[in-house]
Structure formats: C-alpha cells, structure tokens
Image (cartoon, rainbow, N blue to C red; front, side, top):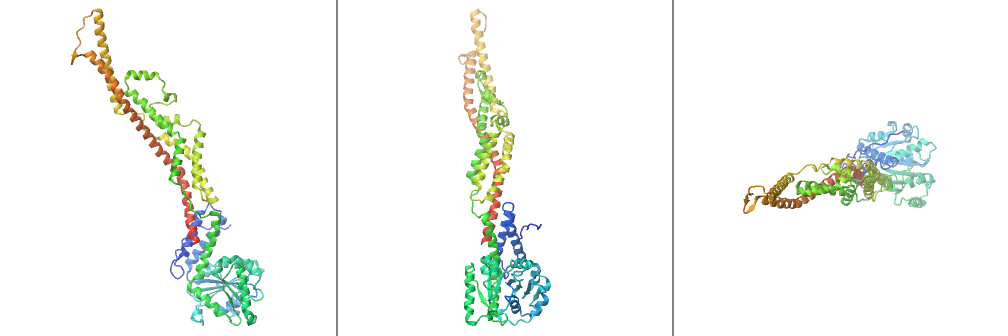
Length: 553
C-alpha cells in the first residue's frame, strides 16, 4: 500500500529565470490548504493534490531553468521521426538507445541540471541524450537551450505498460505536443482519452499535423482548418496547429521558433504548473468550499456565557449570596431584642439546606438545579447553538468538524463548570470588622438599657415597699437610670437603623462580587472548553481557505 504524501515543503527555489513569482505562491497555497484540510476532507481528494504539490516543489528544486516538452501521438504518426528531426539525431542512434517503446526517450539542451531532472522523472540513463556536446546549427530564433524533449510511448499501443508510462510522464510535461498524421488526425482514441480531457491545459498545448508533405499543397490549409475545428469543438480554441514534415523538414523551423519562444519566456512551464495547481484546487473547492465566514462573534460569546451562567444557577446563586449576607449581617448588627424576634421566623436559606455562614460551594450545591440532566441539557443546548452559528457558510465536511469539536467538549463543560463554581471562595464565612464593632456597641447599648430598666425598677419597688435606697445620681438634670434606659434604647435602635442601610450596601457589594466572579469563571471555562476548540477548527478552515484562494490565483 502506498504511503500517503506528507507535508509539502514551500517552493523556496528560484523559479523560472531566477525570480520568485506567483506560481511559487500558488504552489505554497495548495500545500497549505492540503495540510489544513487533512482529517476534514477525504484523503482520496487530498492525496492527488499533495502529490502534485510535492512533485512540483521537487521539480522546481531540481531545476526552474528547463522546459519539459512531451511529444505524444499514435503509432505511425511520425512522432519519433519528428523527435529525430528536432534533435538532429539519426534514427539508427535512437534504435540503439531505445530497444523498447515502453520507455520514453529524452533529449536535453543545456543548461546543466537536466540529468538530475530526468532521473527524477524516472527515465533511465541509457534513454537520455544530451545536446551539450553537439554542434548546434540552429539560428538564433530556433535555439532550444533549456529544452528537455520527451518522446513518449505510442498512446494506441496494445501494451498496458505503454499507456501507464505515457500517463505518468504527461504529468511532468510543461508543454504537450500532440502529433497527428493526415490519415488519423480525427482518431477518437487520442481525442477522447487525452486531448479532450486536457482542455483546461490548452495554453500549454500544441498540435502538430505531421507528414504534411503527403497532403497536396492546395489541401494543406483545409486540413489544418479541419484540425482547428475539431479542437474548437473539444474545448481547445486557440491552440496552435502547425503543419510539419519530419521527413522533408517542412514547418520544422516554425515549430522550433514556437518552442524557443516559450522556452525563453518560461511560459509553458509556468502555465502548465499554474493550470495543474488551479485544476487541483478547483477539485478540492467543490467539496471543501472557499466561502468567507463570520466566525464566532462577541455577541455569540456573550450569549453562550449567559446560557452557561443560567445552567449553573448563577442568578439564583447571586440572590442567595445577597440574602445570606443580609441575614448574617443583621444577626451581628441588629438590635438584640429584634434579633431574638427574628430567630422565631423561618430562615429561607436554612429551609433550602444552606448554612447561612457557609461557602459559595455550599450555596451553589443547594441553589443549582437539582436534576443533573436538566443542567447538562442547558449547557449542551448552548454549546450546540454557538457551534451552529460558527458553522454558518461552511461546506458539510467543515460543518461536521466544527460540530464534532463542540460535541466532544459539551460533557467536559458541565463538569468543569461544577468544579469551577465549587472552587470559588468569596469569603462568605468571614465577618467584617465593622460588623463585630457594631455588635459590641449593640450589646453595650442593650446592657445600658437593661441596667437602666433594672435600676429604675429597684427604685420603683423600694418606694412601694418602703425600702431605703439612696437617690440615683443625676446627670445634666436627668436621673442616671433613666439616662441609661433611654440611651440604650435609642442608641441601639438608631445604631440598628444606621447599620441596616450599610448592611444592604454590603450585601449588594458581595452579590456584585459573586456575580463578577461567576461571570469570569464561566467565561474562562467557556473560552477553554467551547470557544477555543471551535475557534481552532475555524482557524484551520481559514488556513485552508487562504491557501486554496492563493492556489486558485
């Protein structure tokens, strides 16, 4: 079983004349898109693109100075004769070097580096010919330096290996030259199997009508026109059609000039690679899409946090904190007689099983929904809702990935929320200093009241039974017992009234503190357990989308 292509290296080599261009950026984009889409899109869709990106990167690393041109055609089309004519090689020499037509023959015109390129394409050394040491009689406009010419196996051979070799090498070619002969230029085999499916590559396609010397001079233009009409119908309008005679040399210079022009411009190599990348990217887009998406907005985050707050009973918990603080504070700051009366009333917190002096954890366990699955349903519903919003605009594979990320975290959210709330300590069991100070003053005031009442009662009783009791001291014209009674009563009640307003403010502050603490805690859990996994998928999609858009150009 073949190994799946790995991550593609960036096309960092100098490309096509020593400068980096948009083809390298598009190749990088395709590689990044494939890497980002792994596990989200089908490997059967991504593997060919990864193989293309890897192959192209390797090709560019080996040489950006060569243009690979492939001659393809049927048996008898004169393809090999044309190869000999272009290379100035004798047919006998070809026969020696090419004992079987199942292998391609290659000829390279400098610069250096073609041998490594040919080895990379899998062409054996005995099937390689170099023009570096040969006398080149070409004129300036027909010099082919930088050309790597491939003579492919016949496409209509009955040998399966010939078809496989041709299909393999066509992928490497920067320029495809389809060689037709006058008798079979409309042959369905080559048109249906190769030319028509390659319509997207018309900018890197040439068609040569070989053996044109076998057509009467007056009929040549009509024959060339017929070929052009066939190509137009097959989706290749504008593809150059050149008539040549490899036997007599007619039109060969025209073909050389076209090849030389493309080699100098490096247009064929760039265009073929760009079209390969665009075709591969377009195939991926049909499944993965390329739409811009809104992502997770601040409003979505706020809605999630509010829903999760509700799922842990945060509003009720904040109310319980305020109520607990009020009752605890009043027990410390209220007038003692009123405290005793208050104890006769039922404590709503104790009725809930809550210790008024307990922690936020004890409050939360009592206040949170008693049925676990209800709480879980609330959290899961909130997570599902934000994941649906996050997936708006995505194609199905990416939507599924986003939903899967949310489903895998929903159970953790409930547990994490429970544990987080239980860990929060608001210091509810701690008594503020001013509560204790007021408590002491209240008991002093109450003691003064009791002393004043008792002293006055003794004086009254002594008058009734005739006891001899000394006169009570007088302060500022007022009897001290009466002064203690009034001072204790008025002072205690006044202190309780003043404390009540301060207690309400203190309870509100604690409730606000509890609310803020709960919101921060829930927001942290929400971010870590819900938003971060969803955002990771969206970021992955954005890397894919950015890469695929660059690949499309």
